[in-house]
Structures are given as C-alpha cells and as structure tokens.
Length: 315
Image (tube, rainbow, N blue to C red; front, side, top):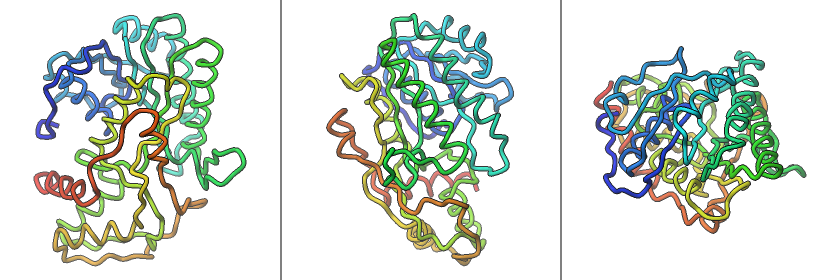
C-alpha cells in the first residue's frame, strides 16, 4: 500500500466507519479517506490478515469486528460514532464450493446487523457495496437476475437496505462496482493473474474470453464511493460504478501480453465458462453521472499500465 499514493486535500472531514477495510477496495478507500481529512475507524475481521501497513496511517483506528455478531457490530458503531459508513465486509463466492450459509450469514446477516446498529443514529450516509453481478442478464422483468450465491446475497442485502430507507429513513445508498482492477488486487483475479503470467513467461489458460466486461480502475471506484456518500438526494438509490464501455476478456489479456512483451502463450479456450456465465455486463454510467456527477476518468490502457508497473515490483 505504501506506494499507491493518497491525496492531501481536506475534502471529507467526517468520522467514518469502513467495514471490510482490509480488502482490495477497502484498503484503497481507507487511504483515500485519510488523504481527504477523514477520521477513520477501519474494521477488520479477527481471522483476517493484519493490516500492519494501515496501522501506520494517521487518523486511522483499527477495530476488530465480526459482522456475523450483532454485538460486535454494535460495539464498532458505538466506538466510531460515525457520520458516514462504508460497508464493504463480505464473503466472495468466486469459489463455487463456498458454503452458501456462510455467504448468507456474512453478506446478508452482516448487513442487517449493521443497519440495526445504525437505525436510531443520526448518520449522513450509509454506502453499501453491491456488485454488478446482481444484474445477471439484465433483460429480465425484475431487473435483477443473480447467477450465483454471492450475487444473490448482495440482492438480499440491497433489499434490506431499501427497506430500512423506506421504513425508517436510514440514508442508505448502494453502489454496484463493475469489473474492478488495479494495484493490490488478489492474485486469483483475472487481471493480476494474467499480468503475473505475462511477467514470468508462463502460459495463461483461460476461457475463450468472449465475455464483455466493464473494466474500471480501483481509484475511480473509490471516488465513486465518496460521490455516493456526498451527493444530495441519492438515499435509497443504487448506483453503477463503471465506465459504460465493455471489452472482451480475451482482448484485455492480449493487451497485457502486448504491453509486457510476454513470452508465454495465451491458451484461450483451455478453461470452460462458469455455469450460468453472464456474457455482457456494462454500467449505466450516464445515470450515475446525472445523480452524483461522478464518472470514471482512468482509461483501460492507463489503468493496466499502472497495474503492470506495480506488479513488476512484486513479481
């Protein structure tokens, strides 16, 4: 984290609670908040990776919390007394063997515990992290069509947030990031896995790569979180965080190969698509811009370049 950089402007002078602060987006968000003048309480799970680098940041207090435990969540909320809450703590179901009940306990139960802890407090905004995979094919009558356990749990969390806003006036806003990438992303994700293979000269087995995805750089996503926390009149809304433009997965891998001069082979078609694979996901970027003024600014070529250079130092 130390070489990712943060701003120095005092533009977010609030008390902030961030759950899931040790995750990929959470770490970037904490650093951005510190640079913007926030006093941050950063939530980490007791069984997670210690946030040693984050402990050295000014105006950050690390709090151990388990979102499955309502008392733990209530304690963290009481201690931080937040003006703004960013809820990113979640179990990802990228592994198809993940226990669905664990996903429900963390992603749904954890959200409800947080909403309950906040229901009687005066907070400016609660920003909850959803996922673009809630949409699925996006041509269904309902508008949401989750294709795996993770996405289904995020739909359920969205529904609870909407209910707390409608029935109690809790100022909750949901953001749905699309294909986020950038420095610090877990190595099993597509882009860091491809970059690592390219830099080490290994072959890269993948699907045929026809999926169209809206790739959005993590720094842009963090700015989207801040916009969702400060834009007037977006309580109860769901906001896409993406560029509105899609690229085929194979094209992105080929760009990485060209950028790095990779010696290995791209083995497109070596892996099957996931069951129920959604072939196209694109953000409604115009709607988010109308509601918040936020747009992604970092293009794919620039974002990949920054990520490659960061990973060169790690490989």
